[in-house]
Amino acid sequence: MMQPIIDAHIHLDLYGSRQQRQLLQEMERYQTEGLIAVSNHLSSAERTLELSQVDQRVHPAFGYHPEQKLPAPDELSGLLAFMENHKETMKAVGEVGLPYYLRKEEPTISMEPYKELLELMIVHAVRWGKPIVLHAVYEDAPVACELLEKHSIRQAHFHWFKGDKNTVQRIVANGYKLSVTPDCVYEPEIQRMIQQVPLTALMVETDGPWPFHGPFQDVMTHPKMIHASVAKIAELKQLSVAVVYDQLLKNTKGFYQF
Image 1 (cartoon, rainbow, N blue to C red):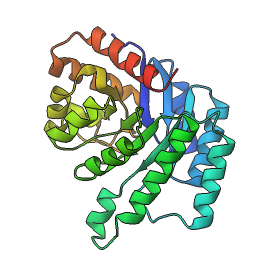
Image 2 (image 1 turned 30 degrees about the vertical axis):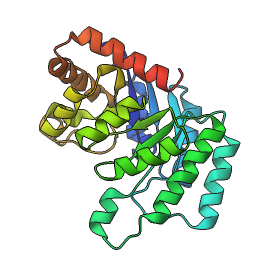
Image 3 (image 1 turned 30 degrees about the horizontal axis):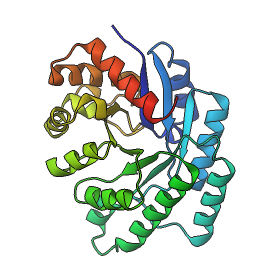
């Protein structure tokens, strides 16, 4: 039986308007209490804010996604001004981080400007008293951890995390949160990570509209998929589904201060 959930990471602005309406209309049906809607850049943040004004269950996060070219100075200043102007509405700073996949495509890209941008976002998150939502996987995750530790960040969310066991332990020891997508149903790498991480450190997300495989092949990514994630986490943790639902909801509400 389904219990209440929160999608801890979704790009709601990237869905078509018809799909957005469908997701919002079906939230109650699938016991989805809220959506943490992250942004990719300034225009994305503006659209995400509009969606949150339409439906109060949409909780906006504003940031600059690292898997793209660096922002021009005027775009960055515009984004920071927008975030400053809407800091009371902003649930978190995000999505921000480091360009792991972009570097795979373009190995000559320098990391330093991206690190500087991430640190700038971290500094502002501290100033605004907001959690930060991170895209930092594999060897980029320790770099992100160093910057978070440098600024004594306590509220950090590593979304769709992938990385080595030592980094997982470091993230958990720092009191940060990790979230998993519906690929936990069929990806052994993610399943192993779930077994390493205490349930108190986990959240669940879709990262929609990113598509998935396995039982979700050719299906629009939807928060309802999280119920399958919860069942898999319960199986891996050898806990009751009810206990997992309760703890994941508690984790997310506590982190995002619902």
